[in-house]
Image (cartoon, rainbow, N blue to C red; front, side, top):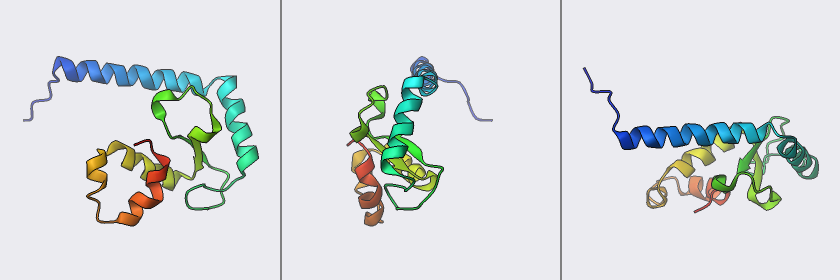
Length: 116
């Protein structure tokens, strides 16, 4: 049977992530955030800024997720669920590993939506 115990560093990191996610969730409930998002949708329309797909189900992607409360329109992209998933996958990768991807088009298509 595998050992499922976590080190104190792992527990500490997990607690910070949970706290950070809770703060982001609370912020996304704020009137300030809802109004900002609504204005972005109104100004940019119902098209994914990555692939061009027309959809009402656009997600607001933070290009710099560490500063999610800074509501600068240039730091956000409206993207469809599929593109947002791909962008998130790239964000999770170390920059040097992104370069190793065989599908160079993937990095070119989605890389512009992440902070290096």
